[in-house]
Length: 184
Image (tube, rainbow, N blue to C red; front, side, top):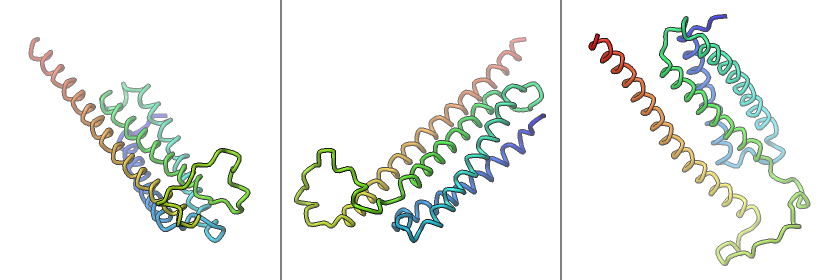
């Protein structure tokens, strides 16, 4: 079965748009603390199902892209473009995994005995001594959110550099063909 390169890209864009919506809901829920507690089980479950559906569609896109990579004769795109698309799909996979991990960690312990107190505990600092467990958890979640944002900024920067590298590769390939053509 032949895969249409334009249709594949349109499917990727629709999936990215759907994922951005789900990712936004997860981040919003996390920042508001709405992913925790028994009152939010339905929301958490719905978001997890949305992420699982996106993961399934990514698998289909991955399979189709692999077919395109094997059938370069019939696909009217360059190997550089195939590499760029592979990068876009990989980046989307990584973002989906990160969001899935946020959802996996979103269930707060229901009872105190779910915490593992067998490991040595760190002494509290003067800064945190006056805080309740809930306040500490909120502070921890805020810090984790900030770290996630920093990691996402780094990922975007690295992804941009990677895209620039693909564009340079495409340009060099094109220039090589033009140069070779002009020499003949």
